[in-house]
Length: 264
Image (tube, rainbow, N blue to C red; front, side, top):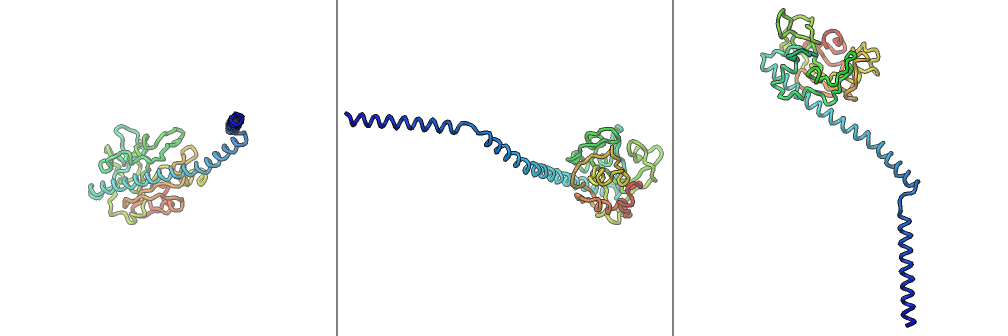
């Protein structure tokens, strides 16, 4: 009996010790200390600082890829229009808000099938002369600016298809451009993103180089701009040097010479 009681007493002591150990363990695992919490917050902040720019960059690369894909479709639509119209290029009409709407995109839309390809994914509009425009595509039908020197100019009294810009008659001589006139089709810019990073105040603070005065500019693609060429191909241009070296007329006037002189 004494041995049994000793064993029972020993078992009771072991159970008591186990419960005490468990209680201590529970107390030890309860919550974080202030230092541990601060360490976790610091780690999360470091990871966020590392990963956020990566995610932002990945999203922008995706938008650039989408913009380029759409631009190639626009270029193809223009080429199909030219082929179907005796090698004549579309009539220049841009920034028109009248009803019915006029624009190069309207003329080539039957070959594009989707209005959506004329909207750049980074088209966030801009402060156009003090008037905030949510989207150039929504306001004017296209995110892309058409190169005036590369499209047909219709200037005939009473012609409803006369070339217009900003809802006004274009003051240029009547001239239907033919495809054979393009001397450097793969180098000649026919359309481009409305906003380009080098047209901003950082590179053009006075707005005298690209004519984007401070209250007209807003950044779209931070790394460049999508450009469409006369042969139908599209390219993402990343510097003002490349942009200025493009041509803006069938006979090969360089952008650096023709920009602001009726070619753009």
